[in-house]
Image (cartoon, rainbow, N blue to C red):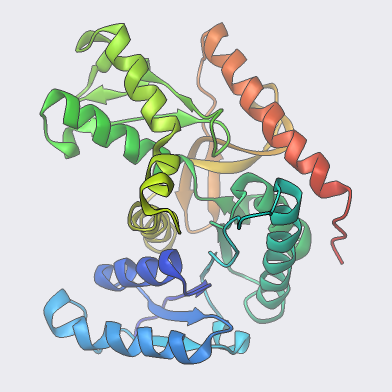
Length: 316
């Protein structure tokens, strides 16, 4: 049996798909927790049945349960639980509901997996990171949000599609909150080391940047009744692998800033080094003034959400 254990709280589309992708990496035993216990167990069994064809074996276990105690001794816990916005719900309604769900998950982590690195996926993501941090009382670097990796991988795809080049040749950097005010950085987005500013016209880059900002909304518009989950789940699996294998992966994530980029007391997407201790380092890039202004605007939008959270949230 694997020495590592990863638990995913929330076995909906993102949580279940992330479990599947992590299983294929064969790096940890897996536990999915959801109030819908039977559904969660069924998904776990179904994943195990796929093992002979997908490269994982009895060397790892996959458990589905409604019992939070099963997350005991996890190295990483991923929180994907939460509701999408429903008709008639405003932003504050969604914030209250998901804050309550994340708070419950965080309490379970404190009780059963107090040494875990916590990866937050629930929306609104940057704000839910604050809920997780306050509710756990964990070290600032042990709570991190999945946002920048997803936004960057979308940007990477759009660039590769435009240029007709290999996806693996494209590397992208996206900062800021996980929303319309995110800050893709074209001059730091490269194809085999060549900045895309050398490969495309400004108008084309602007179009791809705009599509990146609206990438999630594009999928929601097509699905009508849900949101993206394959790319978000793949992004979760990438983060989990970085922590479990301690590979010191440089990736944009929602990290808690204490003065970096001129921003205090806020989770915002910035380049980080991910390893076994969570956010092991925040990389402070030299930004141009226009880029810094965009990042400030993005941070202001996140802070507004945190201020709304503070009107009703109590950590205990």
